[in-house]
Picture 1 (cartoon, one colour):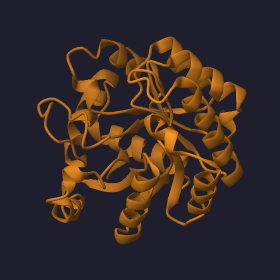
Picture 2 (cartoon, helix red, strand yellow; picture 1 turned 90 degrees about the vertical axis):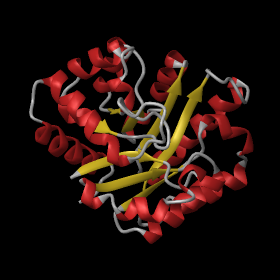
Picture 3 (cartoon, helix red, strand yellow; picture 1 turned 180 degrees about the vertical axis):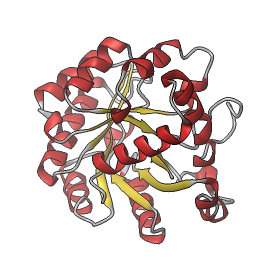
Picture 4 (cartoon, helix red, strand yellow; picture 1 turned 120 degrees about the horizontal axis):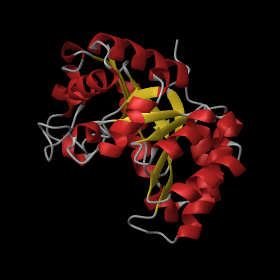
Length: 255
């Protein structure tokens, strides 16, 4: 069964048909989903989803664009949430210099703090990094984040940067972007990287694969990503599904 390692089913885009969509995932070949927090509010709704659905797990964390809301009290609350049985990661955390808000120093401070949190609670991290390759890598090395392990979500950098993360033991998250015509760099990374470090993800409702680009994304579109990986790697689609599910279970420490 396909394991969607990064979704946002608590998003308002699913408000009208969330229950119906989630109820149909198993029949569509989707076995497990990790819903990922991006703020304090969305971490709360993510936890609610994980408690309602047996096949959904949760990640607790604050996206770089939302880090201005963080303070010591909210960090304490996040730490308390991280010990809940269905919380499998701290995320999504990191740096986003594309939108460049809040100011970079605030983003860097709370990226470091959330890595330290992950190390304390012994959970892997889900890293969001956009237009911030050097600073993300530097902070991950300085904070010894490899001891926590995790995934570089929606990987968008070069083979050289991929090699740095792979050498530290991180997984790379691959989704709908792989099917885009302008995804040459990502296709090179997928060709280069070992299959046992690749994770499938949607980041839904965003970044639907071709032929659904521009539509609301969901886990049911992941077979298009599986097909793209299969073609790049020259291996059967079933092998991609089995390997990526095993990778996800290993990284999230699920039996």
